[in-house]
Length: 312
Image 1 (cartoon, helix red, strand yellow):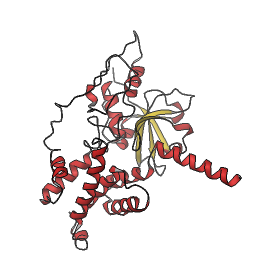
Image 2 (cartoon, one colour):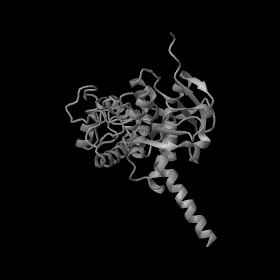
Image 3 (cartoon, rainbow, N blue to C red):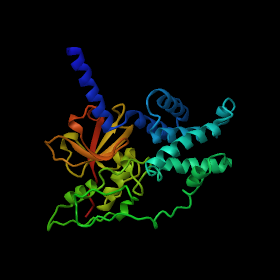
Image 4 (cartoon, rainbow, N blue to C red):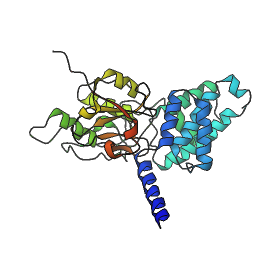
């Protein structure tokens, strides 16, 4: 009976942690930033064939782009002559899955990378509809869209209905209260995006990645952050983790090194309370997580900081 209880408890813990963040997808993002494309191909192939990720569109997309990158490496193509064909198959699998999800990843920089490589290689052996979708990434207007967008006015806590066509700049920042501290306005604004999907490289149109989200939200309230999490950590004023409060940033590292930052979140709690952040999770999109009680995030928490004060 004790063994059965232990197995159930382990299963529940695993489920809760997998909902908070997909560790394997996190690793793919890190490897891609490190340009370790061979490892991505090995890992994604195993994830799809043996680890139950055959329905994860982002895993297929990582595999497609990694193979496309390797097609530019003569050392790899000498022993893998069909690499672009393999990439196209992975891309087609991604396309069919993401199409069912109403193209959550359509703003991902991975698609832009893939498009450029296929164009450079003059590779067109892809199903017509999915190829046309990929090539249209170049011609999409980055600012003016004819699609319907959702504008949320004067309702600080209301979530954004991103399932139509999401564009972050369409979300109103006006608050209803007579007087609200600026940091509370920012947190209210940040919460509007809860549920907006994670998009690798996303900075607002279609979705966000972790640093794209913090850059976007703080940018709305006067702080221009660098683009990636590591640069944001170097930019902000370092503080003790226990002093972190609403509006500060917390940083995470897979190996506990402050020089290898892999994730960033926006603090929405006060000092002395559990550290709670709102962030872009690769599995759940924009969500709120109690870092202090989370067995995945707490061991990875390595730094905290706040935007430097403006000089008077």
